[in-house]
Length: 273
Ligand code: THG
Image (cartoon, rainbow, N blue to C red; front, side, top):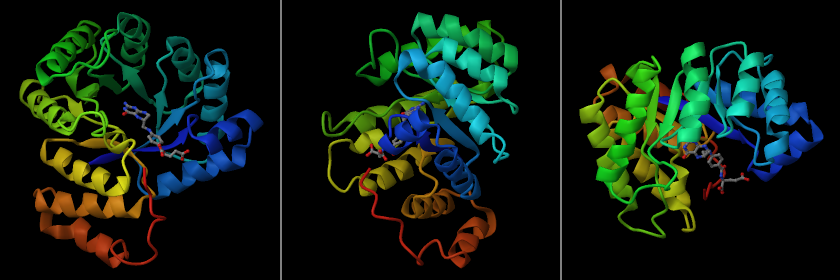
């Protein structure tokens, strides 16, 4: 399981303010903390100010990459912002994301192919997020065809089946898990990733829901997740689930995490995300 650290996101108030004030220290702290906690990529999202997004994303990349070795995951729907950021990035980044929307396929896939980037592909298109597993798979097939036609190998695609809040539809997690299993069957070489916390939006005690959902998603084949690597309770759930699912030979990671104090020690601040 590989983790994309989610904390450098301009939709978070503290991060938006740091971007606005060009507060490099705050951003660099978030970068080093997440890298030390084992993130394989750091998600970098400059927020929603469309006209400023290219400049803000470039500033974030140039601020972060001198202090960490891990590659970045450039999180934007805007082809211009992604193209600008790719010019200043030193290590091949992941691109977050394409989808079935023609504008994103046409604007972003050529960049992905040219730079050999891993890319996240959302199971949605210009009509939104399909209600059913079958219709999400139609979008997935279309995106995989487009990726293949552009010369992007399946192994560089991280499919995101998308999780909607249970508060609006209590079948939402089931649809997402079914979509994951269908993707695993049809595209065995592609990866599966997801932002977990959407599943609990609007509900109390979100961290419990998020942890159970992570566990079920791992059983359905999730091999990469966008989450807060500093959330110890999430990490503990992850390590235990991987052991139970037979992904931890000789229980090495589990016992190592135990010895490092992951299951006791100071608790993560109760995170109700
Ligand atoms: N799929 C893909 N990319 C994504 C998402 C996804 N990128 C953005 C998002 N979803 C995942 N990233 C985050 C980043 C931060 C938080 C949640 C998801 C977060 N939220 C808290 C909350 O909502 O309460 C706290 C906000 C704050 O601290 O201000 O921290 O699904 N491909």
